[in-house]
Length: 178
Image (cartoon, rainbow, N blue to C red):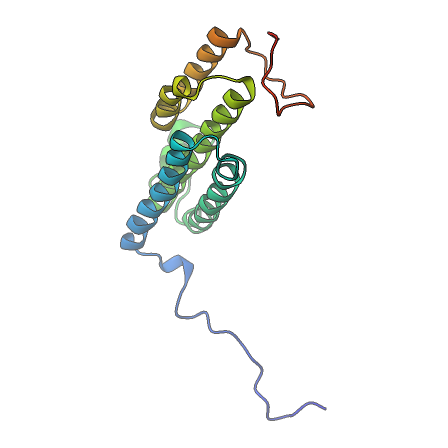
């Protein structure tokens, strides 16, 4: 039987509202996102052979944490401005919001880190020396596509291999050019 005088349980979310993220909070989120990304880059550079780092922490866990930050910032920020992806002026209008600007930065952090992780895993699969890959990681971290292009150049020069075909047996280094 139901007690007529019982009060239904309702969680109280009034103390923290996502839309009330302050500028100080945005600066903290910027620093936190940077720290997560930097942790990932350090793992790629210092311990590329540690498989939990290159198979789970860097390509999955850190990007998922960054994705949650991105999604919250995007959901709040998109309500603040009128912009679009149809023109440069529309994109400029989107980035007029500090929340969307930070979301855009986190987008870069997550995707560049994911590409850096792919470079390390691909180089390991192909039997490339890690020290040769480190400069590519540096440029991927700072300049994204330029670092990826450098990695492809290194890959082509050391393995005569530009085609990306991980195939069924991706655990052993490739012994023939493809």
